[in-house]
Image (cartoon, rainbow, N blue to C red):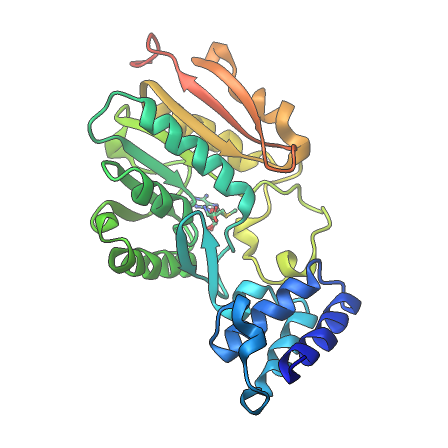
Length: 292
Ligand SMILES: C[S@@+](CC[C@H](N)C(=O)[O-])C[C@H]1O[C@@H](n2cnc3c(N)ncnc32)[C@H](O)[C@@H]1O
């Protein structure tokens, strides 16, 4: 054993007592961050190189500050994104919906598909699509100025790390309801991970105290923003275009009902996340209703 591995074992117990969900992984990832090494090489850090600031960062995590705020980074599909106070930390559930959208874009016969990401936050969905569908043009809409600053930073960061994303993501200051008026009827895919938690629901401290309130709460049933996004997607999409909207696991049937045939939606489908829970709904805009 090394000093660092001993300290990690103690830190793991401390994080477990504080109610952290994955104490061992977090203790190791914080150690790797503080010592500037990969997680897999922690055992090679010499005792003399142990950095006591490790315990300051463990104290932050024990107070339930998110791991990603401590390291300053979040991983989303093939991207490394900067995150911190004022922006929603992207989640693995959203990677599944984004993967579905990337496959849907690969299947359409359009040279440069136009995508709208409503409520882009850190820019995670928009940038992943730009990275994995290099021909796409992505419009990322965000109402919160602080979140927009993080998105701007990540767009610039990805332009260096994944140069083909440069110039493909356009960030807009806008609202779900009125976003992208000049693209009405011209969008191939609308995607959104909107605020969808019913007001009054319990959330863990990492969420309630650190994710911005504008990213979380969706009215009394959690569907307020999703209803607005349905109207906006109906306006933005061309006939045959698709929408994908994330929701909470108990909301699958209710969100399915927000995209009914009589509003011009076809193939409305519920999709599950990696743990088998309902997580997003997709629907296709009817060709006949293109001009309605
Ligand atoms: C749950 S977060 C998702 C962020 C990012 N898309 C992701 O998946 O990590 C929802 C985002 O929608 C933004 N938002 C909330 N209400 C909005 C509105 N009316 N118009 C535009 N953006 C809004 C929030 O500021 C937040 O960044």
